[in-house]
Amino acid sequence: MAILRCNSCAHIREVPNEHVGKTVKCPVCEQASGIHDTLAFVKKVLDKHSALLGKYRELEQSNNPHPKASREAYQLKLGEEIDLHNTDVISNRMQYQPIISWFERKSVQINVNHNALDTQGFYDEAAMEIGDNFEVLQDVIDKIRKTQRNNYTSLILNLSNHSQNEVKTVTRFCKNLYDFSFVTKYFYNKNEKRAHLTLQTIPTIVRFFNGEWLEWYVFMKLLKHFYESKGLFSCLRSFDIQFANEDKYEVDVFFLINSKIPVFIECKSGEFRPFIEKYSKMRQRLDINKENFLLLVLGLSDEQIGGLNTMYEITFVNEKNFISHITKLIS
Image (cartoon, rainbow, N blue to C red):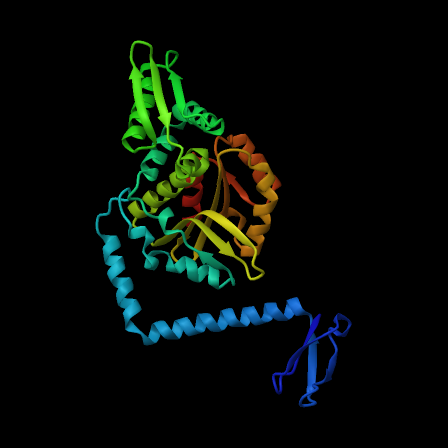
């Protein structure tokens, strides 16, 4: 059905679609009234609502000194030395408010997951260890995932063909997994060069090894990079967005630099090809430049990156080059 809306008396009613574009007399006040396509009409209403909401918030901030004081206090807190691996500062609303505002200007609502920003747990430390030593630990992660998929908990790692440095890296990682309670038991037999692990079955731990570790790794590497460069930024990870038509999507990592430069990152540790079209359309809907909309694929070669970036309207990166790419965007 189409919509008849009178600009004189505000009368509104549904009419058959064949009347779209016509001008008729309002049945209430008899003034000339247009008949609109429903979707087009709703979009105009939402756009006007978003614009008015933005103006209202600008007026609210200019008339209320308290939000400004809060921002100043929060900026002072950020100026202090912070242990990025043990803080809840990032989950403070004032930190990510610019991102909320950025999405609202595009008529997109977001739902923040505060647990995904709290680094007082050990997910971030474990993720950094995996990412920084992935060439050595890749086989360990693959075997943990395979064991989990088969609903087993016992895993034995044979390290007899590893170098001394590799054995040291793997055993240190396994010991940290035990200290961080990612596994319930750990024992290393030096004579046999075998590491024995008993895995946790808690869903959050399973999801971590199944790919969430990469999201944590990318988020923490960028957080550290921008924090140490003392730049102005806001950040979120693992949050939901909802468009005006109620389409919902999850976003892995999002940074807003200088309150105006968006960096959208989707992380894939496995198959990525079925998602190319989905993220290409999302980039267009959000009106983000190709260079700022990244699909980070673990282990993607430089040759593959070059070819894919030529073929598609999103930017492909890997775990080794994403920071250098983003740094070039900012500079």
